[in-house]
Length: 253
Image 1: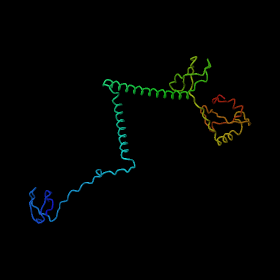
Image 2 (image 1 turned 30 degrees about the horizontal axis):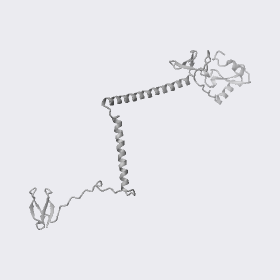
Image 3 (image 1 turned 90 degrees about the horizontal axis):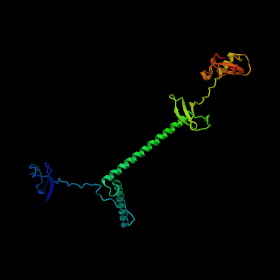
Image 4 (image 1 turned 45 degrees about the vertical axis):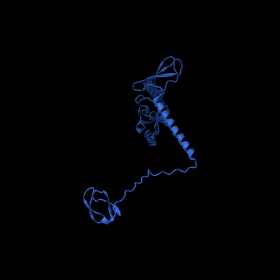
């Protein structure tokens, strides 16, 4: 009875009889001596288990096989028609030669460029409209023309320092210079401790005529000329003296 084993030197598959176990014999391949083992050392190669080779489980469906096959054919036909239409769009109309294809592509490129130019022009017009609206907010046009009493004006230009703008009447072409619109800021209130200090310093009477009725707090240097709300810049004046002083600079009253 024979059994299989491997050569310990060259791993060649050999066969020997059971009666020759434990004896010394040369390998017919490499020629080296070895002892014949008492049991088989040959292990057959196991079949690789690849999950991709295993049969996939068939989905269980109540639909007949013929109906499923028809649906598969319809889906394949739709895919084929879709790919065919895509290729037709890339190649162009049937019967188109090389020159016609070149002209068609050139026309498509020019059409795309013109479309892009139109978008750029539209963006520029939008930016210009926003700039005109901003300028009109800073420099509001006159209410009406002094010559023709019209209310339609066109903004011509801004001054180099952007402090004034020139408007032109659309009918009589008269020009108007408009200064920059600056909203009036609210005047800061005078602190109560400063008012008490000024009244105590002036003795509760007008600093000019000494009248003690209808007194008002007056800025020696007007606020519009940079005067501050301090006790050194405030004085008590009666209503008549304060109206006479108005907003004149110091020294002129």
